[in-house]
Amino acid sequence: MVSAVFHSPSDASDALRADKAATASAAPTSAKMTQAPAPQPPKAPIDWAGLLLKTLAPLAGIALLVGIWALLTMKSTTFPTPLATWQEAVKLFSDPFYSNGPNDQGLGWNILYSLKRVAMGFGLAALVGIPMGFIIGRSQIISSMLNPVISLLRPVSPLAWLPIGLMVFKSADPAAIWTIFICSIWPMIINTAVGVQRVPEDYLNVAKVLNLSEWKIVTKILFPSVLPYMLTGVRLSGGTAWLVIVAAEMLTGGVGIGFWLWDEWNNLNVAHILIAIFIIGIVGLLLEQALVQIAKRFTYETR
Image (cartoon, rainbow, N blue to C red; front, top):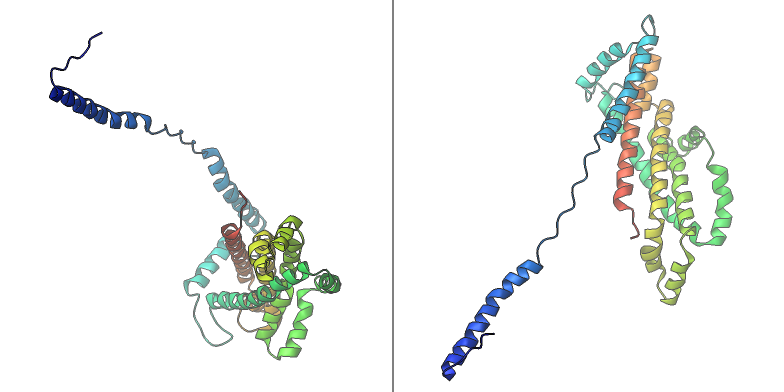
């Protein structure tokens, strides 16, 4: 063992300062050693097989449909082939927004007018149906009164409501919006009411203990719990609204994809009828996917 011998007080103070400096210089190094970054987990490999399956499977299904269509129409003189239908579609979409009067407008205008009617009828149904679903779900008395009425009116065919709209509004356009409204309101009411009734009773008991107002109960407890049910009803109503507008426009006339389809049938233009069917399906699919994304965006998740 080696012992340090100090010959004067100044030597001792110099040694003390040297020890403190050495300790200070060693501290950052020790801290850096203890704060070394943790090793990153390896990245998961890309699932190429699953990605190809998701991409190729839908394309294979569409190719199968077109192939069967082509085989069935090879020798047909009345039903157009896929190639002939595609050529007609290219012509139609080369100028989709022409306007030669109220009864002769491009395909783009017909689609937009149909979407406008759907948006109005669907929006009115949401404004009325969702609050009504909350009321029915919260009140046993109102639920008992209105459930038989809803069960009676919900199965009624959409076209059965159209004459009522024509009689009341004396015009085709509001009659079509009325038909969309009355047919798309039921899924919103039913799903919202079911969601309210399935809220855990413990949540409501806590609200009573805290003496929360009805507004806070609805916004802080009911709405987050009911939202998945409510959005399911909105999705179902959106699909119903798009189906109803096509049938309603066939009977009311004017501008719209349903009227355009019926007009092409009167002209015996089968290629245009097929194009209208594909457009109705594609627009309906896009509306469905948009509502699905909205549902994913606003769904509350419990963690």
